[in-house]
Length: 101
Image (cartoon, rainbow, N blue to C red; front, side, top):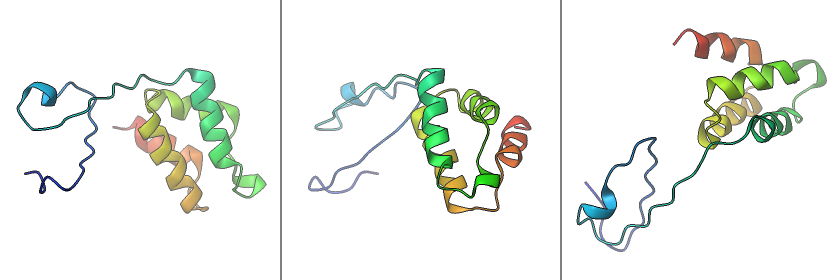
C-alpha cells in the first residue's frame, strides 16, 4: 500500500522488484553496487573511531563484518550505526551474532 501521490517512498531490495514496469506511477530505480573491501573496511573503521580506544574495532574485525554484510552499504551502515549508538556492544559480539545466522 503506497501513500498519496504527494509523498515519496524509498524501497530497498537486493532483488529487482519490477516496480518500473508495474504501473506504480513515477518510479526512479537506482541500482547500487557493493562496496570494495577497502571502502567497506574504511567505512566501518571511521564509524568505530568515535568509540573509546579500547572498544574500537580492529582491521580484522572490520574486514569480517564487511564480509558478513556482503559489502552492502546499507548493511554496513546499520552495523556501524548500531555500534556507535551502543558503546557496550563489541564488534566480536556482532560478528558472532551475524555468523550464527
